[in-house]
Image (cartoon, rainbow, N blue to C red; front, side, top):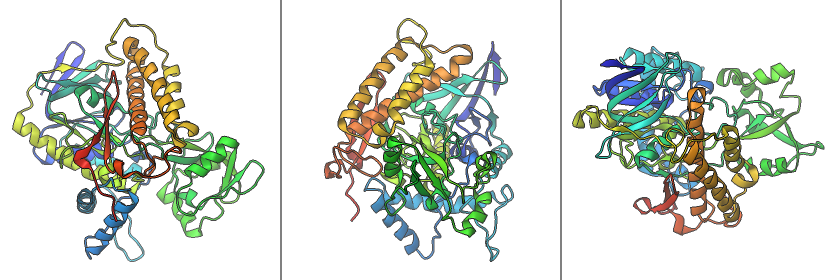
Length: 529
């Protein structure tokens, strides 16, 4: 049902999905199949926006037979995840991902191996997202493209009742009254120039926190990806075969294994770093155009053969995209602590399955497929039980309704402050209590000014609200990292180099005016033996 009220398009649905990437489209399909009427609002164009559309995503894809295959994978991940992941959740996503991907037959052209066996694990991102757009369209989901959400709506009993946003192309505003809302808005790399992440600014985190939700795992935000300088090309598979050099041509020694971020960052703090990909096997070189068809484009434009020539590289921070943190999940259907509000994909914490290290492409993709469907089905059940009646008020604050008198706040300066604390190698990769405390103070000062006076209008409305979301997210990241007084997984503190059994639990964080942290004793876990 829809009606116009001035310049606002008002709609009603059982379930509203905010975000049209991998998790959002799977959520919409699940909610629709559960019998709910569904509206999906995407900041960009659903089927092309988000990080999956630019990638060649793999999935955590392990056959159910023999059973020891999955048991071994879960046991190994439990160890590398430093005790913060849950074997039951890992088993659940392995099962649902295995069941789900083949259902895209007819929408996606799966490749076959030399024996003619369909390959469901690794997909081509642009085609994958086109298939998912076809899926939601075929199911009768109403899609609002180019319609970023700005704020949630909440009833007096604390339950969410929909959201409001703007229609960038059609003009005017939109309001969806809904019985339940799924946040599938992705994470944020703090606009680090990570490929495909320009629309990922942590919007869902801020909207949920304004409704009273908390986050978890926000300290695990130190994943960086190698990329050529002056490039957003952060498809990183080929760099497994890289040899790195300093400005004088001396080889930079790398430790065995995949962890290269800290030695590379240390070298980059001293000077320029170069690499070549000469060690890449021929079969991998042949597959790169299929796996990551855009990987070679910058090199061709520059006249560089990366398999022969050296080129300068940098590190792009991935924040909570291939980091771990997000909204805390309190139930098996991915509901948050706010009634009627669900989270999926990078908008939700992935500690449940990834633990304290990145889920990379495979676990994170499987999480998006699975959490999206659990959240969508859960939201449909909630709406069926509680109704989708209208009511409630818009609750957006920072960047929309300043706490004090409005005055101009420089968005560029604010973003520079955020990036200076969240992306700088010497602050975010090489952490200490002293630097984290100083980052928290700087970000708190920026928030006090922004929250009190910033009010987006006109063309600056979206960017103002996005800046508020990134600033809030940065404060939660710094607060959570300061509270985890140890080193664990990707969170490494030079002043606390060892794991401490007192922190065999997740760290909850939240708050707007004042950031708070708490130990999640309900999820206190023993380290895997």
